[in-house]
Amino acid sequence: QKEVEQDPGPLSVPEGAIVSLNCTYSNSAFQYFMWYRQYSRKGPELLMYTYSSGNKEDGRFTAQVDKSSKYISLFIRDSQPSDSATYLCAMSAWTGNQFYFGTGTSLTVIP
Amino acid sequence: DSGVTQTPKHLITATGQRVTLRCSPRSGDLSVYWYQQSLDQGLQFLIQYYNGEERAKGNILERFSAQQFPDLHSELNLSSLELGDSALYFCASSKQGSNTGELFFGEGSRLTVL
Image (cartoon, rainbow over all chains, first blue to last red):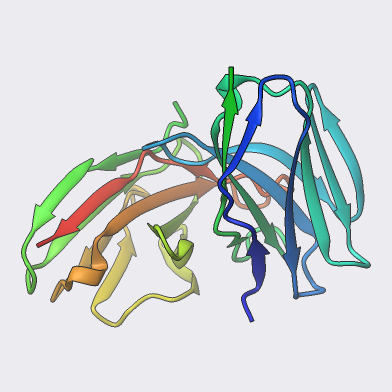
């Protein structure tokens, strides 16, 4: 079983839709959870960071962590064509330790 | 621009050959990570260095090796290359001790083995 599971998609939504991206994990020691966005032929860039359980909101993006279910989500409101990218979840047990990445979900927002 | 520089951007070589990928981390970052990204495997952690010392090792093949130099730049050496080594290789850096867990990625080196 992989440490982190993520549905690769692809996901295609109309502009303005609410997008939900999800990851599950198996290691209960994970406490740092991140979402990275990767545009085609570019390196991943950090989008959201959450420590332990709870919600975090940043503009149109909301990250949720449910440690009891080992499940994390990223919600994108009012999706824009510029949100079209691959979204990767990542997690680690403590800072400086190895980060485990999901395989990424490819998202296309259609104008 | 993340501040992490990787060279070369593209590399085409033949099976059995050896290549070296280079990474310069962001100014002040002591940790360097190497990742391999292929279509079916996603981002696979290879190895991490912190201030010149190996800190963690992931799924790195014995044919691959890396080091971090005193000026903190890092090199990933891939030898006896096989077709399956074709992938994007990313370097990332972070400020050890930061509690954001943020990795800053370079643009990657795309390796094609023919």
